[in-house]
Length: 246
Image 1: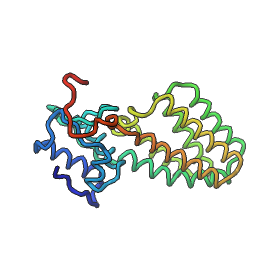
Image 2: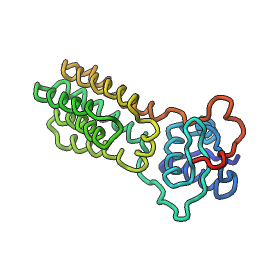
Image 3: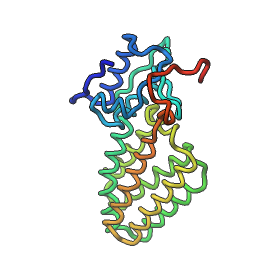
Image 4: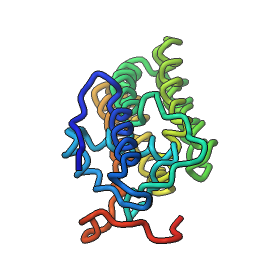
């Protein structure tokens, strides 16, 4: 299949989505065809799997593919009224930015935190544990925890940056990705990671606080990277989506 290597400078996931959409329109894949696995697409296009994942989610939001976890990615009938293509940062790009920024913030917070700051983190954690995830309420409490850490530094710009980066998950793009992988089990894992960050800050251990925040946001990316692929033995030649599947 005529996949092309993806090169900068344009946003990479957008280039991938554009190329796949062109192949659909050119008839290289018919409606109902299953696309090659993400790993194969990444290898053939010379790009990372997270970028492939972002492109596929963007195409699903546009209505050009249908994602069936455990089965694969299928070409969908184009909608009569095309959706506007995603143009902002992809979820993995945002999480990597948060990983870099918030790890440094957690490190400094561990040097500066006082009893009131720890009490604020504890209050946020208590609220996070009271509701069933995923919901708008738990997401709001998650945001409160991360901005509370930033507020320890006494810098309103950093609080705003952390809050604005977190708010990017409210987009249809990020929400569609999280809908596949966020559940009560993933929330328990995330809660444990949040507590590890809190404990390191409370114990005034900058290196451990940095590592704990880095670990949390890296694992968030890992959770969003779980495979959409068909089970072993079903990933050969492109297949058709089952008739009537939703």
